[in-house]
Amino acid sequence: MKRTVVLPTGREKDILMDVTSLNSEPKGTVIFCHGYKGYKDWGAWNLVADEFARKGFTFVKLNFSYNGGTIQNPIDFPDLEAFGNNTYSIEVADLKSVIEWAYEEFDQPISIIGHSRGGGIVTLVGGGNSNISKVISWAAVADFEERFPVGEKLQEWKNKGVYHVVNGRTKQEMPHYYSFYEDFIKNEMNLTISKAAKRIRVPHLIIHGDKDEAVSVKDAHRLSSFNPKAELEIILGANHTFGSKHPWSVRFLPDSLREVVDKTINFINSSDKL
Image (cartoon, rainbow, N blue to C red; front, side, top):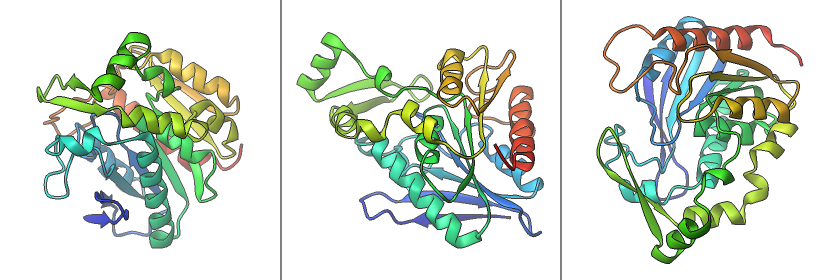
């Protein structure tokens, strides 16, 4: 059973979510956050939702409110202006709102999963939210600051107010406004992943592929060093998306992503204490 929910944010853009579950009594809620240039329906994420539902969970996957999609068209990036105005702070606020909604809606233990940039977001939120029972990152970044331009490129970005990144698949020139960097500097204490990871007091799982071409597996080891109580799983031969791509036209998970899903479900089921 799958339903769509629009969650108001109080800002111009709202959060679009899918909620997938079976009719049986769920044993927990899982919230999934996509990564950079991602969205809830990318690749094999729908199959991931189905698998978690089959294993007895309510699976909530969201589009961050300023990810570039719209309520009417959540696929790809019809709203590049929103994409350009997105910030890490907005994504943190979005996830907190979804957690609060899920806590009131389902009254179940809540686990949060994030892929790539989304893995950084769940780490930030998991370090200080009493409603969270598990934190899981897939191919997560370990530091947001180091992903910004530096030196002359940073100054050029400030002077122009915007720089563009070409989406290799859609061929769109995707804007990043300088306000993105300004927001990070203003809120750096709350957006530093290492500090948040050290505050995580619930079971924490870090999964990464050793062939990740977008976020080095070194990030996984750094995340693990921030929280020595975290469990670290390296998927041999896996790339950044664990074998998935968009569009994903077959009705089964790629082998690496299947391994990630199985390890995550086992972790949620078995990790009752640190």
